[in-house]
Amino acid sequence: MSEGWSTIAAKRLRDQAHSKQQEDALVLQESTIRQEQGEHLWAEVRKQVKDRCAQMNTELQSNVAVVVPTKTSELKVRLTPPGGGSPRDLAARFKSTSAPDALTWKTSGYRLNSPQDGEYGIYIERGTAFFGNAYTTPEEIAEAMLNALLLE
Image (cartoon, rainbow, N blue to C red; front, side):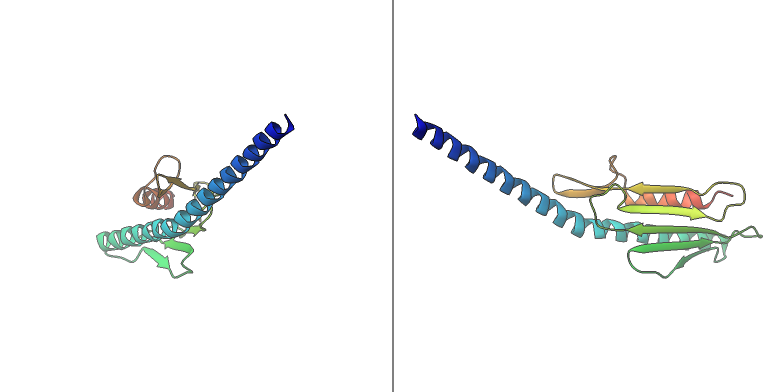
């Protein structure tokens, strides 16, 4: 009878070790995906913001939205409204993490409104990384940040 118990106990411990190995492999895989694809997603957010600022400057025939050079993990934009008005700033930061604040942003410098902000986590589904829990695209994030910057 004790041999039967030891066989069952050994199988149970082997199964637990196997489950732990599979879990560790999944965590490592997701971390790798988050690192590689998260950097790409962030680069696309930065590109979308820069492109939209350039388009707005062209439309207004004035350099009202200036993307300030920063580290690649940051993004800064200064908006100086045409015809006066106080300048407004957008600051965003990215870090490859599983935290819900992998991408954070905040605006400041408003005359009439409170600062605006937002945050997005990086989530993994079927081997693909995306921002937010609603598949928020880099384009949507760029527009949300810049729309907030346009408030007075």
